[in-house]
Image (cartoon, rainbow, N blue to C red):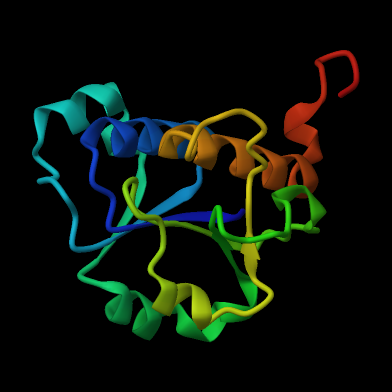
Length: 160
């Protein structure tokens, strides 16, 4: 199954909502520090409700630590950036993929993005907004990846 990576998330309710989504779909969630909050934050816990025990959570001190642990899989990395010109719908996702999202206020750093030419994707924005909420963005891309990788999850009971 694809994995979700949040690099330096800042807003506890967003991370809590993403954790709940990951628990519901049995997806690994990797948090790359420094985090903008404590994992004990009541808003984080509240957004994740009582699902935290079901989250396959992995913590990394920083981007360098994450890359030491998983950098060998970089050909399976997809980075989301509003500065990319390639829509997220143009990718053929695989079970081994990593979906990597940046912090709410600034996205992924230019240094991180520069290390992955051709691996950056965007979610189209039509209206007059700067960006989507992080938890919404993760949902949009993750469900497209799952629709492709695990189509059985998206069939009606009658179709199964």
